Image (cartoon, rainbow over all chains, first blue to last red; front, side):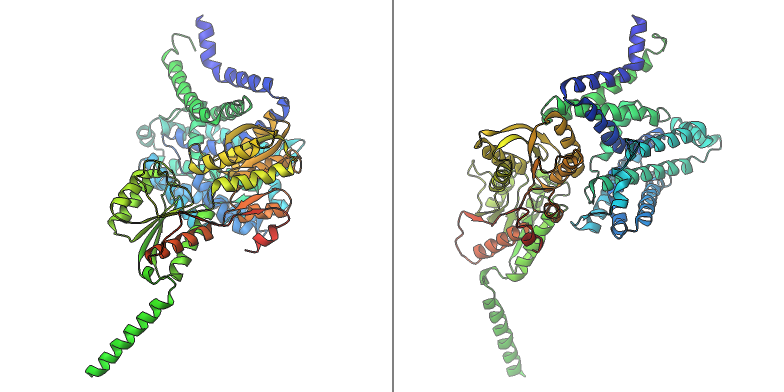
Length: 314
Length: 316
C-alpha cells in the first residue's frame, strides 16, 4: 500500500499525462493528428515562454511581463522583418527582450522592488508602450523566408520542436551542469547565504531575467512567424499560463527547486488537458474552473509529497 | 479711440455670430462631450475615437474620448462616467461594455441631467431607470445575421457549424452568438455543433480551431465573433488543406481580414465602420444639444465584405 502510494505520488504527473491522452485519443477519429497538433505546434510555443517563468521562479521571483515583452519586441522587430531585414529583425527582437529583462532585473535587485510588483508593473508599462507604438495597426504578410522558421519542418518534425528542444537542452545544461546554474539554485534557495559565500547574487538574478526576456521574445517571434501577423495584443495570457505550467510542473514558488524539465511536463499536462476538454465537447465555461483546479491540486500533491516523503520512503 | 474700440467689438461680435451660424448645429458649439468606449487598443475602437474627434471638430464641440484600461471593464466605465459627471460635461456618449452592469451609472447621469447618447451596444433599460436619448448602432445582431447568411449561402445551406466566441458574458459575444444561432436555425441542413471561447485572440483562435477540426471532421462553417479569431481559424484550416471546403466568416472588417479575403482565404467579414458609428453618435449629440428631436434608433450602414466587393472596402 505504502509502495503504491509512493509510486503514485512520485509519478502521478506521467500517469496523468497518459490518462488524459488516452481519453482524448479514444474519442477522436484522428488521434495521431491530434497528438501531432499538440506536441508539434501547441506545446512548443507555451514551453518556450514557460521556461522563462520557471527560471525566474527558481530565483525566488517570477516574471509576469512575459506577454508584453513578447508583444513589444516582436512588433518592433516586425518593422524590420517586413522590409526583409530578417536577421537584423530577429537580432533586434532578442536584444529588446534581453533589454526589458535587464530592466526587470535591475528593478528587482538594485531598486529592491518585489518581483511580483516589478514585473506586473512593467507588464502594464510595456503593454502600454506597444499600444502606442502600433496605435491600432498590425504588421502582416511577411516573406516566406521568415515564416519558414515556424512553419517549416525537417524530417517530418516541425521546426518548432527542434527550436524548443534545443532551448530545453541548452537551459538544462546551463542550469544543472555549470557553476552559474548551481549558483542560481542556491541563490533561489537562500539569497543571503549565497551572497555570504561570495556569489554575486544580483548579477545572477539580472542575467536570469534577461534570459527570461529573450525566451519571451523568442516565443513571440515564433507566434508572429506562424500566424503571419505582429500585433500589440500578442500574449495577453502568457504570464499566467507560464506560471500555471511552472507550478503544475512542480517548481516551487519558494525558489531553489524544480527546473525546466519539470516545466515540460507541466506544459504538456496543460496542453493535453485543454485539448481533452475541447475534444470531449465540454463547454468553455467549465474550462477555466478545471484549469484552476489542476493548479490547486498539483500544489497540494507537491505538498503531500514533501510532507510524507520519509514515511513513503520516496 | 472709444469709437475704434466699439467698432472692434462689433467686428468681433459679428465674426463670432458668423462663425456660429456657419456651424450646422449652432446650439452645440463649444459644448463639452465625453465619449466612453470599451477599449482604446483594438484598431476598431481607435477608428471610433478618430471618427468622434472628426465630428467634434466639424460641429465645434469639445470631446474627451476615454476607455477603461482593462478593456471591457464595467467598473472602470462606471468610474469614467462619475468623472464626467464631476467635470459637468454637457452630454455623454456611452458604449457600455456590459448592457446591464452600466445601468447604475446611467441612472446617475439621468439624475445629473446629463443627456446620454447610446452608441454601439444597447444600455439595458428594462428597469426604466437608465434613459438615453437615442441608440446609434451598427447592430451586432444584424452583423451576425449578415455574416451567417453569407456563410450558409457558401455552404449551400448544409453542414456542421461552430461559433468562436469572445470572453464569456460580454455583450458583443452574446448578441453575435444570438444572431448567428437564429440565422443557422433557419437552415434545416445546418447543425450548430459547438460554441467555443477563443478570447477574441488570434493565437487562441488558431489553437481552438485545431482542436475543433479534430473533434468535428465534417466541419463546414466557422463563424467567428471577430476577425482576429477568424484569421487564427484560417491558419488552422489552411494547414490541414481544407481552405475552400470550410467556410470562415469574421466580424469587424479589419484591414488584414480584408487582405485575407482578397487572397481567397477568409470568406467573409462584416465591415462595422466604427469611424462612421462614432461620427454619427457625435452628430446625434450635436443635434440634441441644438434642440432637435432624435429618433429612438439611428442605424449605421453595415457592409458584408466578400471576395467580389473587397476592393471597394480596401480602398476606404
